[in-house]
Image 1 (cartoon, rainbow, N blue to C red):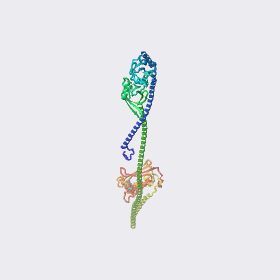
Image 2 (cartoon, rainbow, N blue to C red):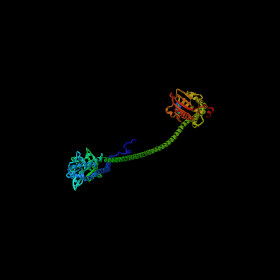
Image 3 (tube, rainbow, N blue to C red):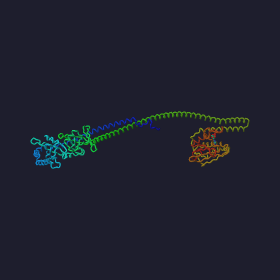
Image 4 (cartoon, helix red, strand yellow):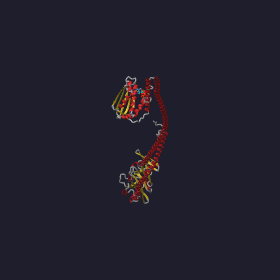
Length: 630
Ligand code: ADP
């Protein structure tokens, strides 16, 4: 039975509704937002960690940078005071105009500077004029130069320690200046200055990614491991700072610029600086230390790109892991859902199957009960049929009995009545003395009695014993006997019996007398049928056919009509008029032949007439005494 896919019994899973799809989209969006927030918070935490590492490294670098700076300064810190005690210096300041003393001082200073590794050492008079210098013989000699504007001079001349970092106005080289007052006899007569070079330190800081800078008190970078930020402030200078820088001519004629940078603070207290140089923007994490005695700030700037990348990597790894776990979870969930769907489908199919089984069982039960009912009806009908049959048989029997009684009473009453008439007439003839007449009548009476005797013999055949022993009977002998019996009839009818027996000694399994009776019957019928026929020849042929023997009797009469053919072997069926036939001949013959194990059939051959075919089992010849024994 075809079922449409939309049938309500269809167990396929339902399609998700539009509402369900909307709900899934909302859940997906919320999940996305949660994942994004998670990723952001993981990123923030990872960034704090990587920034922490970066700051730690920066602090280490800072400590090293600061230590190297301090070490360098400490090396020269006490030296100006010591050199100020030297005779050559003191003598020069006592007689500043003495050229010999100047010459001596120059040589002394040059030698000392070489030994100490200082950039320059020079002596200034009270008014700031340089009297002698270690570079007296150099092109940019300080001798004759006045540096009264430098703070280190002012501090020293006032009895203190002069410290200053600046770009040399004469040499145009950066240097750190240590100034010490030269006290001769309780009077400060001048200042001794040592200028040291910090280029070496700067070179030692060389690094590709890190920036190490040192800022002066005004916020201007004067030391840097990369030259592009030199003499630049990391934030725009205020008016005070600008004025002080100008007054002290710290950077001589060099132009002080500003690094394009934005300061910010990240979560976790990290100071960040976003600097733009050559069009590229770089973010740095700052670590800084104050060198209070020098008034400097040492800053280590570590680029954050690597740390950010690392944090991103952490996030990516975590997200990947999360994705993998999510994916695995999704697969498990899908599998479980598939399994659940399959189980549901199976359950639905099972339910459908069970429903169908129940339906089919009900149908079968209905069919069964209908069949039972039919069988019962059949049984009842059969019983009715049997009853009817029995009734019919009974009725048939009665009818046959009636028919037979009527025929018999007719067959017997007629000769009896005739015999009575003949007897009465014979009596009358005897009274009259007409003996001859009386004798003729008595002859008629005897004829009547013989006829009745024949009828009764026929009737006796019904009570024959069918299981009498059979023997081999010669066909030729039986035919001859029948011919003898019917000789007068044949002659009377003017009929001719043509006999052909092949082989002549052909024998059949039968009883001789009964077979003769059958032949007489058939011959009598043939004679009756050909009574009015032009051709009165009768053909009797016998031949062997395998184990059987075929006996055919053919006449040239009218043949057997179709309606007669069906009933010809029925008892008491006769077309002959009353008194002529009992309708028992063929019926008795049929039964006799059947007792012999043979068959008797009738047919109308195409050339006309009727033909009776006797089929009997062939046998060996038997003794004549056996035939007589029947
Ligand atoms: P009966 O000879 O007493 O009528 P049968 O049983 O011998 O009874 O024959 C039954 C009927 O068969 C006959 O009445 C006749 O109509 C038909 N019949 C028998 N032999 C022949 C024959 N050779 N040709 C035509 N009809 C025949």
